[in-house]
Each structure stands twice: as C-alpha cells, then as structure tokens.
Image (cartoon, rainbow, N blue to C red; front, side):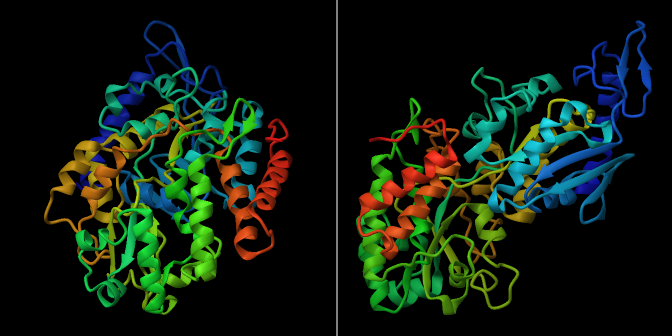
Length: 464
C-alpha cells in the first residue's frame, strides 16, 4: 500500500487521536506550556495543553528522514532540513557522528529541554544500540506507555529490538522500524572465478566457520584477491558472539571471543589476506568496485543498499553482482531507534509517527519492497521471505530475507553494556597499532587500550 493510499486512513486516525487527547484531564508531557499559549477545554471542565507547531527530530544522517519522506502519509518535503505534516513544521536536526558530534549536540539540547521554548523542544531523537542505554536509563527519554502505546501495538516486533531500548525498570522507551541481522556479502564474479561457483549455498561451504574462512582467504590471495577489505570487517561478527560484557562490576573486561578476533585478524593481516583500513574510509570502500579486489564484506540489509555505492556506476552493487550467505557466525550490526523526548509538546504526533513507522505492517512491507530494508515485523518478514516475487537487485536477484529471518532469531543482547561504543572503538584502534607493528606485542596494544579507556571513562578501572 503506497503513501497516498494510506494518507486518508492515517490522517483520519490522527484527527481521532487529537479528539481523544482533548478529553484528557492531564497533559501527556507532564505540564509543559502551550505552544501558542492556548488551552482546549474538556466537557468536564478540565483543560489540556495544545500541541506544538514545530516537531524537532534529532538524528545523525538522512536514513530515517528518507523513510519518513517516502512512507509517512501527509509528510511534505519543504527543503533538506524542513518538512510539513498538516500545520506542524518538521525540523530535522542532523549532526554527523564524527568525533561524537551527534551525541554532544543531542546532550546539550536534552539538558536544556526544561527551559527551552516550545518550538525548540526536542520531540524525537534517534539512538543506536551501542549507546542506547545512555539515553533510555535517564529521564530525558519517555516511556512509550506514557504516550498510550501498548504492548499489543508492538506485538509483531522482534524482541531484541525492544530489549535494546528497555530501561532498568522494564519501561520500553523507544521503537525501531528495522531489524539488523547480518550476512556475509560476497562478489559473485570473484566467487565464480576462484571457487567455481557463485551459488549462495555452495559459497557458504567455503566460509562456514572461521577455520574454513581462513583457508578460503589463502585461496583468494593466490588468485590476487583480499578476503576482506579490512580486519575490522569481521569485528562485529566476533564481538556479537561474546559470553561476557565489556564492563563487569566496574572493571573493563576483554572477552575471550574478542581475543579470538585479535589472533585471527593478526594472522590474516600478516599473511596479506586483508588490510587494516578504518571502516568507512576511502581505502576500505575501494572494495565496492571490481578494481578493489575484495571478495567479501559483512553487513545487514541497510548496509547492502545504503552503504555499498549501489547508485554509483561501475560499482559491484550497481551491476547487481553481490551475493549473500550466512557466513561463519550470526551477528547483527546497527539499527536506529526512535525515542520520544520527555517534555515533547507534540505527544499525539510523536505517538502516530512511532506507530506508523515502526508498527504498521503495511508501511513496513512497503519499506521492504521499496528500500530493501529488513523491517521490524515478524509476520511481514516471514511472508516476504517466502515471496518468490521479491528479490534484491544489488544481490543479483537473490531473496536474502530467509537468511535474515533465521539470523534475527539468534541475536542475544544479554551482554550489552553502556560502554560498548567507546570500548569497541578504542579496542580496534589499539589493535590496528598491533597489526601494523606500532605495538610489538599484543600486551602492549592491550595496555594502550586500557590507557585510552580510563581517560574516556574515568569511573572504570582496568585489570592490573
């Protein structure tokens, strides 16, 4: 069902919601001043605050904006940072994540929320899994139940997506339109040339576990190809399969499987099977093109269509020459969660945005079909996985959704901690020094990691 067809139905729903809101005796936001100073009287003499005329959304790139632009009924694009929903102006406050700029900007806005003018209040902000706990375990985020969103409304969602944004008291404080189980993404042309097949099931046999992965890497090198663009390409797969947290009782802890990544990556770098490029760097991205001589990357659905230069002429993705298989281990990467900000003066619209974008199966199916994203509805994804008419152009006509559906069921977030982003980043930085020879030993690299962590997180201690 397309945007225009949904428009009338959901616009009617919003009007109904507004009418319901005008019969409540208590303002949803806990007592903020009216956006224009007016009030609406109820039949029993009570009053509620009128909703604001500006909706402020804080995010770090254009991904969520494009989803709203393409799939939210009645959204009208004004310019690159402004839109309109009815008589509400939507302001997109987009700050890149480089040098933690997004979180710094968001933190400043949330700290000033109580004193901000109505039109300047944060209404919705986005978070990633690595630092979601920083925001859901404080009062800056609002429980979805306080907006009137029920468990039944979100019953079709994958549980792990709710675990990420559930606070220590059991309150759900965000919602996502996507799930992010990952797969191994390989060059069909290279697979055909070197392995003699490009069939996903047959390629899987060459990458089915890490020992076999290393053997195939040697074969790729002999043929003139890198197995991966960087040692960092496999990091998420290892780090998602740990058995302990980065921080245990206030002490930094390096899980055994993280050290397995160090050993395997050091061997691959020393053998010339991969490089030490930073993710998202120009050198790392060269493998998106045939001349980059890279066999595979690892990533979820958003990575395939959003990050592999699919629109660039001459890229492997543009030619539809990537394939996908499960790889050595299941993992997930990323995801974006919508969190309602405490103090929002647009609770009705915030509620409708969350429900429409993350819990409306028609919209979620539309996102799969139009954007090749993996969306947060088990019934939708199970049906699409079985739909022989669906295929991914980037993946050469393959339908990878069955693999994603199987992978999402294995995601375990029991070992997430509030320190994951910083620990992951600093550990990879230190180990890059080890792989490149800046640190002569693994122990020196670990010492450098500990030194960086105690500066970043003074409240933590490190093993002696």
